[in-house]
Image 1 (tube, protein in one colour):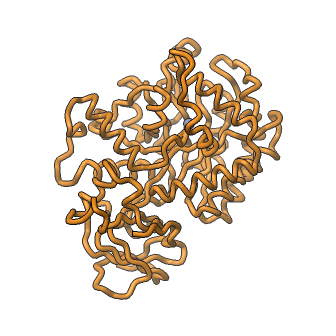
Image 2 (spheres, protein in one colour):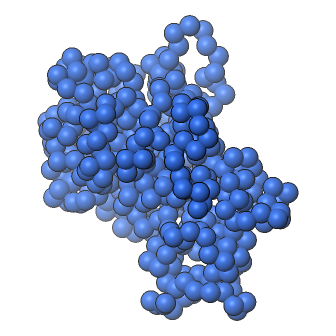
Image 3 (cartoon, rainbow, N blue to C red):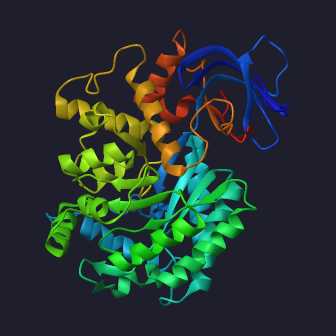
Length: 442
Ligand SMILES: [Zn+2]
């Protein structure tokens, strides 16, 4: 089947399509970088050949500047060191961040993400560098630095400028450390208008909304943000940190009488374009609301492990039809293989079973979890990514067939070897919009 004339063709020995593995597939790509044809590959001449083609992974949650903390935050001086003490250290780095530093850090990170198999990143941008609440100029430079890093590295981006206004529930004023994050609502909405405008000429960039969390954004500001979304960009992605910490849940209950996710559902029209980041300490009733509304949970497994957040009950959630995506958050880890390995092993440890997700055995656990993370990422970015099908973006990762861990193995087993063992070592080419952005030597 062909929609428009391909300008690029790719021949693959194996390809992971939404309905499973297919052998000898030819993929046609049009001038916009979308897949326009799919069919059997009969050895016709093609622009690129790939061993095992899988859709590039979608990184649903990144704070690029936090990559600089890696290796510097693992020495503990207090027995009760936790998320909150880690956060104090992180604030010191934010205070020194400039637009140039933001670009350099993000550009280096995005190259690493691509080399490890992510082809889309959702950047949750709250390092506005604001001198005061009205500093639109610096906030604009800081966000545009991320767009430049996307263009320079070749990674696709959902840019999520963040609204952040207070230190905690009950309108607690932001601390001096938090000043770089804080913008007046009207300034924030002006920033959104500008970035949505600019993104129209950036083929890899789209823009969505991101109220930081309920502790950082009050009812009135969240209402104004949602009104703006409804009038300017209805149905666009909305991401929010929620229920990452027990203390946050307790403070929300003290301040509002409700748990955070419960409060959101009671007060706003939460739709399937929302992505709730973490949701670690959601109650059963809150998880039911998430599942019923089609909201995606944005898990950040290695960061949640690093910060000692707690364990999300993923196997049960998936069993009931819940959608999840994966993110690198603090960027302590930049490999989708490691994130998926972590969620599977965590579920196995908690259930004391190997088939923790009760998969049916027609495909490996790696393939199933990889596909579920792709579907969640596609839903939560609102971008046609994560599938090898006509109309989707041609963003692929090639897994090599001539690595010692892939010889004499099926495509399904090669993806398992990538997830449970080899990671980046199994990656050959990475393509975004049908163009190679990474070419590891086999
Ligand atoms: Zn985060």
